[in-house]
Amino acid sequence: MGRFDGMVAVVNAAAGAGIGGETVRRLLDEGASVAFSDVSARRLEVFLDDLREHHPAERLLAVAGDAGDEEHVAALFADVAERFGRLDVLVNSVGLNRLAPFPDTPLDVWQGVLGASLTSHFLHARAAWPLLTESSVAAIVNVSSLAARRPSPFGEVSYAAAKGGVLGLTHALAYEGTAVGIRCNAVLPGLIWNERLTAGVDPEYVDSYRSKRMFDRDGEPGEVADVILFLASSDSRNVTGQEVTVGA
Image (cartoon, rainbow, N blue to C red; front, top):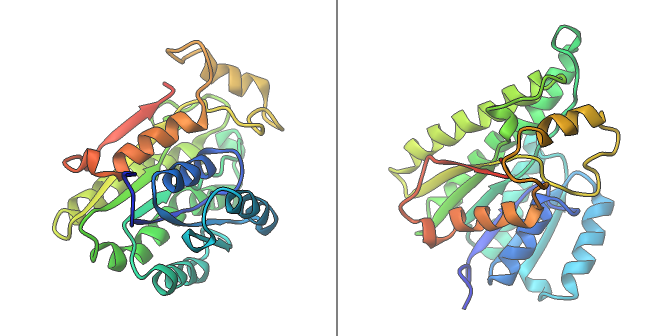
């Protein structure tokens, strides 16, 4: 028996080898049906094909689109309601970081990062809320970042502000959620390895996080997914409004 047998989850930013994709795999392994989305239709199709080799098609729903687009988000949850008839877990894992020194940060960069890394969380939580209120085990897990608490000096103003906003959103949803049975918690990943970690990123930026970490290695997406599943499951049924750092 899995912790999520018979339950339905939505995970965004899910295609690929990062936190979202690993979370989808873990939820499926533990019995959930999962709707997952990504801005890249190509990556999403490749991911879906891989999942079909291990899990029944009736437990999978892939929806491509921009997580910061209100119409896409509304359509995603309409598809979830039609396909599965319920929702128990929402995992917001969208994040975009565009480094720029603060005095040189263009407004479009600021708005783009906040749209992807904060507004997307708001849109998904708002659209999911009516479905979650009908669940007896409803949980939202927002993926923030260690940058919300300890940003690097390499131009993370937009990202730190967005991910700090995710923490504020998490606490507000936790308080409002107590009245309708929805728990909400946040995970703050530190430096988590994936194949794109160093692609196009200043090595000094990566080194700045490595110099502050407590463990002498990069974290792995599965380690974050483990914490997400704990916070989404009945194992944490008396936990809400909390922040858990992984890979500090």
